[in-house]
Length: 388
Image 1 (tube, rainbow, N blue to C red):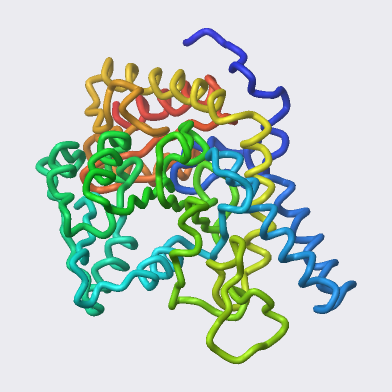
Image 2 (image 1 turned 120 degrees about the vertical axis):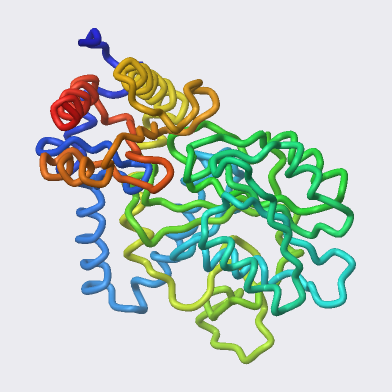
């Protein structure tokens, strides 16, 4: 057994602020974070606002809350106030971004993206080939990593946008963002960082990284549930983008009901589209607030300690670890590939030990700020039993 230790800067009693942690072992925050009890309270408040205020009374407050939630996410990733907008998901935001660029007949019409990019984003950008974009897919040799110099070499004077994964969802491998950003700057290309896999468990600062655009969502490490994607746009670039994927809430005065052309909002609502999914945004805020309260550096320190224990224990047992053994090269989960892994997954879930499985990676086992040493030991003990 590993020695019990109080994680640095993790408040006592934080587990009591989540539903289900007393009855399950939640090792799947890389896929879906545990539900904060305050998220349920937010839904009740939303219903009361809807019922008591009516639409005329509720909408102004909800729009202000959208802006505040965006700023709260910005505080997690180092973005200035007013630079983070919300949408139901990242695919919609990437589509809005792509629709802001004119690829037809342009000298810069190439979109560079990695072969290990999450499929949804690859679907979005390859769809824009019908509008004149030329996608450049940077290959992987092993299905887990892509050499940094290979990505940099793919960026040319014809590159309009470089779409990067902060960490690959198949392998947990972190990329070398500064080197790729530097190359994109030399070539005059925009950089879009998909930080869905890292936000809330790995500290980064969008301003320090000199990122043009970053996107992410709330249902993983941010413990916000589905329905609250976000986009950061460098403030000096705001006026450059006029999304064609848009709607009435992106108008400067949506309730003025003006005819086209649209007069875009001058703040983060510029990236809105049709009627927003208010419940998804309000529910997500509860998780965001806890992340800010604890701080991502403290979360990272706790995660590294537990995932290092997982990695070492798996290797000692002769299990194949498909994620980097060096914690500095991976995000917040460990891949453990064992024979008949899908069967093992279902056996674990039957015991209320929640994780997931991906072909080519194996069992994905995550640790968040609410994960305890005892839970890691329980997982290892049950694995020993199932693989005996």
